[in-house]
Picture 1 (cartoon, one colour):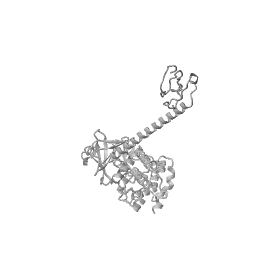
Picture 2 (cartoon, one colour):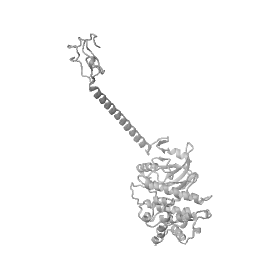
Picture 3 (cartoon, one colour):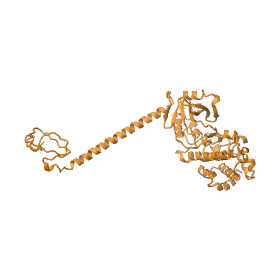
Picture 4 (spheres, one colour):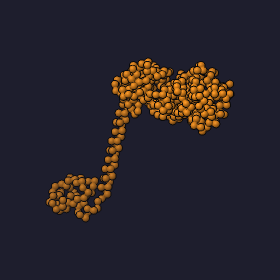
Length: 416
């Protein structure tokens, strides 16, 4: 721009340096420094060639300001997108769990699906009695086939209109769906309408342990041990690795299912709290099955992890004897017929009369004795004298098998 006979006010230039010498008509002084319309720039410029290589500190400050401004704008944009995403997700979840929703399409959040009621009606052939897999205190379970061919078990809860209330039902369904372990029955989906509450699970081809103990061919000793181990691992996860922890309160052979590989999965966990009508951790109504209910739970209505341990001990006795509690009549605190029967035969060392005849003596005698000791320890009268599930698992895995003998010797004293 030098020596070009330029005139008039000097415009703003976004350049690091430039020269205007040789232009006397630019403003009054000819150097451009006193032009009234010339505004100071955040970047420097020189008036001669000698100044070209001497930039001031202003460009660096300007670059820092620009960078900081850009970073702030980026952060605001990111926070805005996050806010919009969370708001949409929350809105989607509200619709997902809306009992009055009239959606006719299957929806899903994470791995949990919400299924239209009409789809489940079709899947179960209008809840045909021919499709009933089982009945329990929570409802009736039906076998069903979804549109894509998936085989499922549909649990239609009793008194669906009041089951836990809408808010509690939503909370419990979310909690159940988040409990993921290889030995827990994973919730596939649910259905909630103004009058219905249904839970949908994967179909377990080998049924329940209770059914298999009565069926043929008989479960071999190795499978029975695997059932005990897997059930213990599932309950340990519920007690010690879930937040908040889940007390099952209805552990029994009918609630332990077997997949295609005869791997046990614990089902119906979380349903007791879901079916309660008061949002409280203190239970006033006893939920469970006669023969598996711990004495303190029966008398106070308050459950703990040791309540589940007691029921697990009864399950061990079923695996060894092939008999269920109902075969000994209804049991209460004074009449624990099955436990007393096993304890009597164990003290008299009459193992051949105790063990399930279907095994045809194909079992390990030392393992049998260890499991009897453990079952008697788990079913002690006082909950504080029972092991917790982590100790039970260690015993089953063989780490503390010898320690149970002392515990089992105190059982008879406690029952007096």
